[in-house]
Amino acid sequence: MVKITKEQDTEKNYVRMLKVIEEFLKDEKDEIANLSNISAVLNEYIDNINWVGFYILKNGDLVLGPFQGKPACIRIKGNPGNGVCFACVKSGKLINVPDVNAFPGHIACDSATNSEIVAPIYKNGAIYAVLDIDSPVLDRFCEIDEKYIDQVAQAITKWATTP
Image 1 (tube, rainbow, N blue to C red):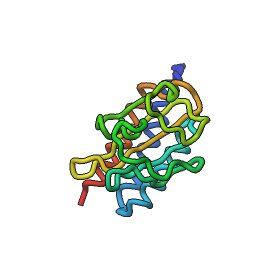
Image 2 (image 1 turned 90 degrees about the vertical axis):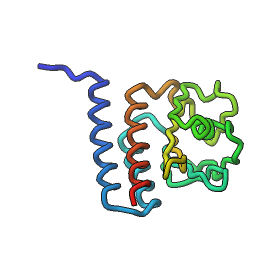
Image 3 (image 1 turned 90 degrees about the horizontal axis):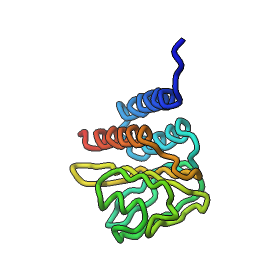
């Protein structure tokens, strides 16, 4: 008998999750409907998280979009470098923060959050939103999480730029 490791099990879970998300994106064109369902799917498939959702870039600020979890910061003012989400916007790359309390300028929407991962979503070559996932567990997100959360962001990017 072949024993399945936790990493293999996690990866299989992410593969299933990604297929569900791609099915939502295949036929629906409404941004709010898709981002709402994607946040719900992520919340169901990813363990040990306390918040998952989107911040949409509008007029230089990040504005709260569809999410799952406790009430969150509604608007993050547009000082690039302000918090993990704007650090992601500034770098244009996924950011994995093992300890948010050690991150300069971290914005605490929920004091229970200890780690965070944020991925950029592009539309027509520019960042238009970020996918933000918080966890009460220190150092919650590993390379497998990074790989598949980035793939979710890429799937949304592909959908957002498809006419």
